[in-house]
Length: 275
Image (cartoon, rainbow, N blue to C red; front, side, top):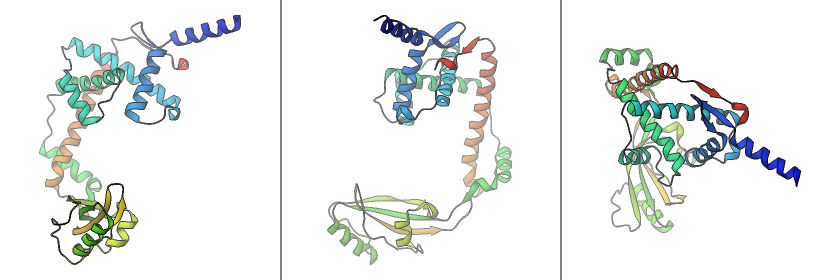
């Protein structure tokens, strides 16, 4: 009994040990593990057994940064409404079945965006900067050979065979076929197409059709609408992409420098050996 008692005391003391402190305020190991396990399960979507010690250390660093961001946001008069949080979750996570601890972690991400919006509102990206980046990084705008495919899904094999016969003969009217869904045409990189699709569509001539391919959703048939060769994305088409990329990089740099300055007013301690 005495051995069991000391063992239980040891476990309780280990759980009560802080894994970090912010200006003397502790983050207890138990609270850290609760947050880490929830985040790994609900956001990373991997078994917790696959988490490494490095994963835990990096999460602890982010957890501490998040708590500092919360404090600084409060000083700046920034907060997050339920609507803003719901919109962020819907856009970036999708699942609404989240634990309170994960919701709090996501709330910090919204606060980070709001702080960045305020401190980086002066940033402007000029056309000259965009053009310079484009020509200095042309390899980033190389386009692979692509094919525009129409997608058809039939509920059963008999309908799929009839659909295949019509499409292969050039008859595109399929509205009279029951249980057939037609998706909007989409561009695909030829090199990333599955072999079963490549072998049937080669050499990707307009009107080329695959035989029915069984999937969980039904029988899929793909039809070539158009092909375009590889090349370089034109500057005018690349401008919105470059502007977004440069703006994101500048905003991240402004936030990083802001955080470095803020951290100088905090005394932060990490106890990684207690993880």
